[in-house]
Structures are given as C-alpha cells and as structure tokens.
Image (cartoon, rainbow, N blue to C red; front, top):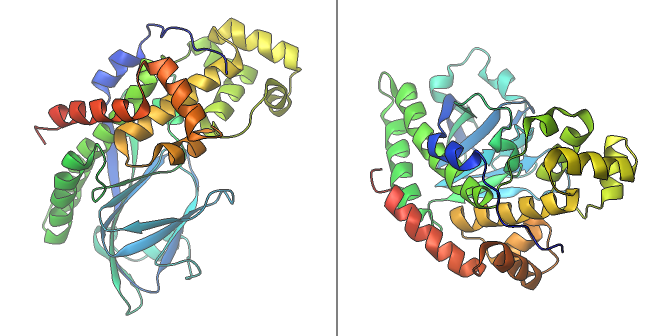
Length: 325
C-alpha cells in the first residue's frame, strides 16, 4: 500500500465541532412475534433503536449478512438503504407505510401474540448545509450496543435508559422529547465515528464532488471501501479510461484514487475502533484489508499508534466529552 501523506488541514475538524443531528421519530412500536416490515431506500439516513426484545435487520444488499439485534442496540443506516426488520428471518414483512395506514405512529402495536419487541424508528440529517456530506463517509450499516464493553458504553448506556424510559411513559409530548434525546445520541456517535476521518483529512474540494466522473468515483470508494478496487475497475464503473480518471482524480482531489481509498479505509477503521467493540480482525474485513496484520501496519503508519492504543485513547477522550450526558 502507498504510504499515506501527512494529514492535510481542511474544514472537517471545524465541522466536527459544530455537527448537529436533526432527527425525526417516525414510529414507536410494540411488536409481537411474528412481525416484520419493509423500509424502502431513500436519501434520508435512518435509525432503529431496540428498546426491548430482539430483531433481525436484513439490508437489500445480498452481500451483507443479516444483523441480529438485542435490547440496547442502535442501528444507523447512514445511506438510507432499503431493508427489512423482522423478529426473525422469514416472517412476513409488508411495507411499513402500509402498516401505518390508519394507525397512529405515536405508539404502534402490531404483530402476533409471541414475544414482544419494542422499537424506536426514525430518520436524521446533519443540520449544517454541506456540499460534502460526512454521512457519506459512514458505511451503509452500523450497529452499536449499550451492552458492549467498547469505548462508547459509558455514555451509550445511560442515554439508552433515558430513551427507553421516556418511550414507556407515553405522555403528551413524548415523541418530541424522544427526538431531542435522539439528537444527542446520534450526534455523539456520528462525531465519534468521524473523528478518525478528521485525522486523515478525507474531506475533498467541492469541485471534485461536483465533477460527474470524480464525484461518482468518490461515492463508490466511500460506499464500498471493502471492495478490491483498482483504478481500472473504478474507471470502468464511472465510464472513463483508466488514464483519464487517474489524472482527473489527482487534479481535483489532490491525490491518486488508491491513496484516497487508503484514507477512507483507515478512517473507517478508526471510526469502528472509537465507537464499537469489534475486534481488529473484524474491522480489517469490514474496511477491505486482507488481514489484521496488514491493517495494523497501515494504521500505525497513518496514526502513529497501534489500533489497540488508539481505541484506549479514544475511549478515554469520549468519556470526558460524554460527562454532561
């Protein structure tokens, strides 16, 4: 892998300090097995918080395994991907819009007489008007658990309890209060995840994002960093020759495509280390490295420390920032 250049100063660090998430709670659900619903893909980022019981989430992408969720798990779908939510794979899953027709989303009761699952579902966006939306740098699916012994547990757990208790009250204004608390919950997760990308300066000039070919290439690299990309593959996807794309990418972004991909991969690895309890081996697979050793070597070159040390330092830092919660 090409050695990464020293981090470049840009606006992402400033952005991290002012990131605010605006969330909307679509539905509070009390679901009895068997249950299921489908959410169509859209441009709006989505979240599901499991308040009680369990659920299975299946993305429309057949290459990604279903996610098994338990109480305390938060799912972020930063790209607005279409998906199924079910008590278990195979349960009927009509469109959520059809289920909500004629029912109040304030407190939806649905499904059979089996074990109960409580869900809080909604959408969110960044409050800032941004040309380079940082949510595009997040992977399509992120799962966080208040039960994990990871760096974020000390602040995820109490905020989850607050959300769960408020959802159970079913008092006037509950939905508005839940959205306010979800704003804090989601802001801290997005900011914590993106802090690794800030260190590697992965923001790009507006001209690059606005270019039809380079912008498409950037979107592919961000959405699928785990893919075994070559410049030739990327050029074929966006409809240019390898030589033309490489030159245009370097001119507008300031570095070659594979160098930028390395930054995205390592930035996502840093995000996983900061906000989840996934092992380095699991993270290596998620971001496109062949082995734990290859990720660790590249990570040390870019960040000046091993993944484990980075995780410990980020955990300590997040503990200080999360104290007011």
